[in-house]
Structures are given as C-alpha cells and as structure tokens.
Length: 110
Image (tube, rainbow, N blue to C red):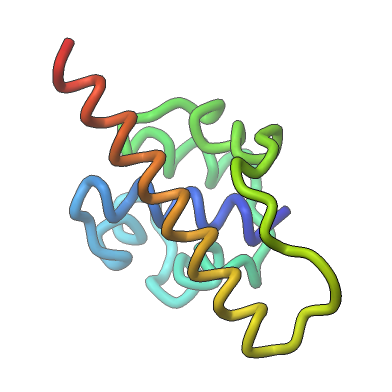
C-alpha cells in the first residue's frame, strides 16, 4: 500500500515539476523523510497526506484512488526474480505517469 501511494505522489509531484525538497519544505518534513514516503518505506499519516495534496493542488482522493484501481495491464504472472521486479516496478511507474499525463492533457483541453 505504501509503495502504491508513494508512486502516485511521486507521479503527481513530477507532473507539477516540483522537487522532493520543495514539497518537503512546504509540508514541514525533511527531504529524506519525504523521499522515504515516495519510496514506500515510511507509512504516511492522514495529516501528511492532506498537506501533500494541498501542495500538489489535488484532493486526498486523487492520491488514494490508486489503492482502488485494478491494474490496466496484467503482465505480472508467475514467480518474480529481483531483476524482473525492478522491471515491473518501472512499467508500473510508466503506466502511472502515462495515465497522469493523459488526465492532465484532458483537463487542459477543457
């Protein structure tokens, strides 16, 4: 769960062209702690999640909806080695960024 939220937060942050340090400063945590949130190492509290949502100009629901989504592509089948896990993680990030880009493009057309 933490990894999904972290990836979603990272995708939203990069879409806004913010650095980790900029977001960390605005929510009142160290850059290292913020980096651990994005990587899924640290759990995220609702308070921090709310602050991140404010900084990124999204709702908490925009961030947490990733927990309810079913993967669009089911390519993870069978036993994963460490290298294949990294590849799958990169694919997940790619699809998350692509989805975010498409959504932002649709918003800008309105």
